[in-house]
Image (cartoon, rainbow, N blue to C red; front, side, top):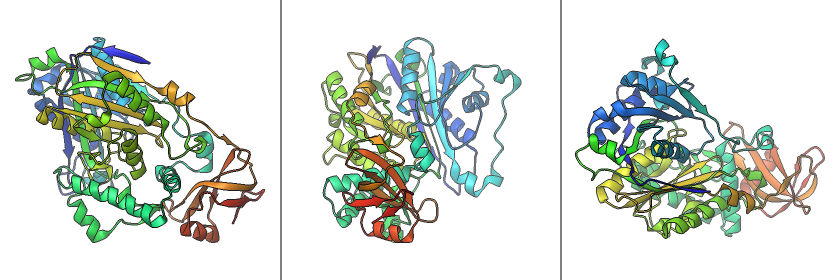
Length: 483
């Protein structure tokens, strides 16, 4: 499904804000308002806020009703408020803004997200209370958008496989087995990938972890989260960060700027929203959606994503970055300008806004091109946005390859009561719940699968020695693992 919209839609201004633990504490609404103000200044004149008539906010860890309404109230503007819940691709927020501006449903849309998790955990008593909406503001239009489908299955939820580290570790270990990596070479690969992330983060003043490379040398990778991942391999939510993006037409942007040299043009936005739960994917380590997005990008633009000057790949876990790099054929080119979600900071459900704000500035300063990606769920949904300093001659391509992904991905039937002999598809030992547990996905000769969880010390010890992928185990009628 493809549409083409006018090419005069621009990113007029962006901002990215990091507050250190020793800065004056502020709550998340104050953070988002400050980021908004800075994005308006980046656009050339904060008077551009007077034409903002729509505010889109990605849901965070916070429980705030109508955060966009609170931002509008603080700024003294009248704007429709839209909140997108977790499970919706962050690129979908950008798509909504482009479509609404194109259809003249909005003159200027503000997308803003933020987290003050570090302040909330450590200095909550010093934070101002979240304000309430005035009676008149409560009458203004607001929307709350839910994902069409949950990114994980009811079976996975019932079994307790709900946290990202365990699911991504299952993908990671399946990848290692498919590529015949030893336990040692696999760990070395992950560490090398993330050391490079740390080096890039060190060049960015706004990175959450400062001197990240030295920090790793001094403190190591931290405690184990889910084998093979340790603390400094995973995204860091406990940050004080906010970002804002203003999307409007070139005419409106020019009214409030000193010229058109600062405008950035989206030229393609492609998504795969097909939901195929991890435990049902025939090949855990292969992400069909990424390959369909890449092929669609080539078809629409005549170029490969790797040809862009800059890339910011969604970096929640190492395997997510690696599979994107392979699908988009990046080779040895950097997959980040920020240093990624572990070191730059990974504010919950709005890192793409953070990454896009920084990518837009890089593209503007260099007058070149850039690509940024988004991921939702356990590599369940994927999105790509490309930017250019030049107006796209053919308009902005908006495309969705969900149907291709859904129809061309093989699925395996789950059988919750399966017993007898079965081969291990993937496994991980998790420590995220405190006491260790082993998660094992097994498949029998009838192409049926079952997810097994064990807290047996004997079983855990064996799976710490080896992930046993491809080995045969015996599942008792009670669901116990016998090695």
